[in-house]
Amino acid sequence: MAEAVIVAAARTPIGKVARGSLADVRSDDLGGFAVDRALDRVPALDPASVSDLYWGCALTYHSQGYNIARQVGLLSRLPDSVPAVSIDRQCGSSQQAVHFAAQGVMSGTQDLVVAGENSFTSGGAAARQLLERTPRPSAIFAGNDDMAAGVLAVAHEADIDVPGQLSIVGFDDSDLAKAVWPPLTTMRQPVRELAYAAADLMLSPEVEPRVTLEHKLMIRSTTGPAPR
Image (cartoon, rainbow, N blue to C red; front, side, top):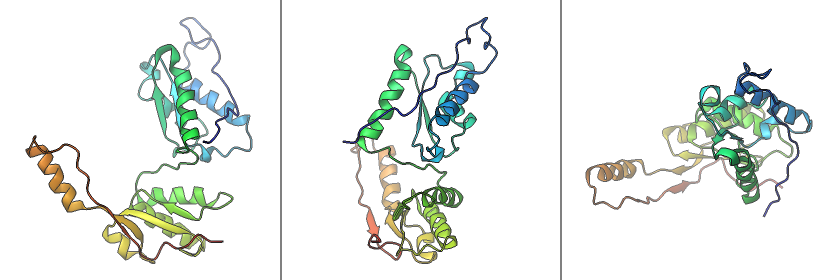
């Protein structure tokens, strides 16, 4: 199991109470300041490599509402591709945020995550971030075929051989998967069966509420052995 360590810490200043010197400063602005100061303390850290932002907040209202974690992230130097979640466990909110972050790292599920909008454009933007890393990844599994096509376009622009230097996999097996070049390896979703199953669940309450449908890996021309 991976080890989780704290590499930097920063906190918001005291003075937010009713008559304090910071009473008129928004909570999300203070949070963005704290995130940036923590980033300043680790100059070697690329903000784009942050997997997620956990933010503890016991009173989620006014400027602390509307998912303050996301607002803090947008007001900081973190790229808008970094997701965020607010946590309310009253007095234990900040401690729980640290626990969730540590659990993600220790489980191996949050080493490097790039979030996008499930579109061609966001797939390309995410690919640029990933392909700038050293060492460069040898494979990218996109959330859908549109994003995978964006990854493929960026690979072509960068003169990266697919699949010789980079394997790309999509999800859905849409018409686009067969239209791009080279044709895209992807997971085929049983779309027709999904629609039938959804209708059965809505119209027949006695139907088993958990339905498992088979997916199929469609191996085409964007995947190959990892480069040596």
